[in-house]
Image 1 (cartoon, helix red, strand yellow):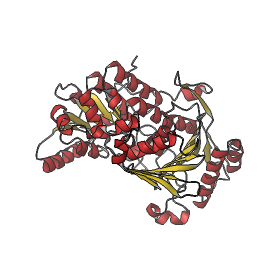
Image 2 (image 1 turned 135 degrees about the horizontal axis):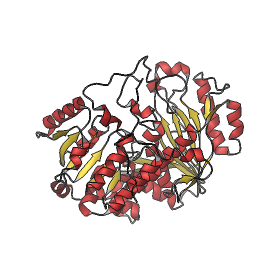
Image 3 (image 1 turned 30 degrees about the vertical axis):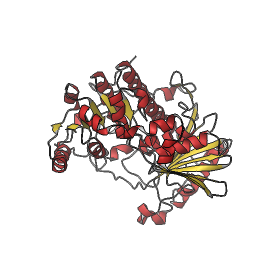
Image 4 (image 1 turned 90 degrees about the vertical axis):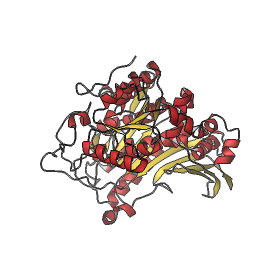
Length: 481
């Protein structure tokens, strides 16, 4: 077995991926002295943004005043200085003393805030997925180019030295041709519950700002925060939450192709009834000509009996619970979700290569801001847009689908062996959770054909209606030429 360290990799002539991997180490002190940052959205992932940008941070922003006050207090206790506290992000964009905004709000406000920030002259770090729909992702890319601002997507694996080495290993043909790539998200997702009457929004929250472009509707889930992921009005389900990472890595291994020309979804929200509407069980296949890419979501445990120990009872696809497997002719590569290691295996599962070494997506961004070089970004917004679009096109197939019986679904996918394999596994998994798949329960989406040049579907008018959403005034994502 060959073991590659980060140090060995960076010393080698590994090409573009290697040169990008060293960037997170560039002159952090110099960057800190020049760049002033505000973090917008600080309840969940935003806490990581605060920590990463602490030396540069001058302002915190959240439309939940309770969260805002708590994070400001925590920051002062840890760093012995007071950040500005701002409820309305638009006030930050008017300030000349802020160079960068870092966005970790819910998905449905990512693109709008990022575009407005670029228009205001700010460089932007924005969490994945960079958009809530396909069209606004393209507007975000256009904004980056039109306003000449750097926009980095928060897909931190793109800064991983280990994964960059593994990608080069596979792309150089050492395992033969790629047969397929699989991303998995087997995360425990119990029911989020359902209220009998609408959720009462706390007075601490500016709910108009929180909704932004999304429809302001009554909510019947018990929690406003985090569970927005499971509502298509504000989130994209686990394919957007986790698949934006794993499909991005898989696409990297495949040579960074564009949005796939064909896609299909099979799945649904199964095993319980709650206030969510995104799939907790889903197989999405992107039918790239060179090699297909599959993303599978499983939120239910191994069986119905395991639902009393949900966290400890999740399935795996081979060794992957949350990760990526790239199957080649002469072996395969596995990358887990820690993003610091990757492994190559022979067909007999013997490990033949191992790579170590992480990276820092945040510091890479700061280094690129300092240099003013878009090509120094590990995860430029174009990368984020395309990988995010794979989430959106898969969900569009799901949303246009119809509930079918297991027999009907099995017959419908029989002509695609890889898809048939994953669907058979999914149906067995659902049966183990006592989901009656012999009645019309699982949603079979249509095969959608996509034209990458126009970023429109060529075979389904209804799908094109879901490429762009209708934004709520005045929070309208602008069209950028």
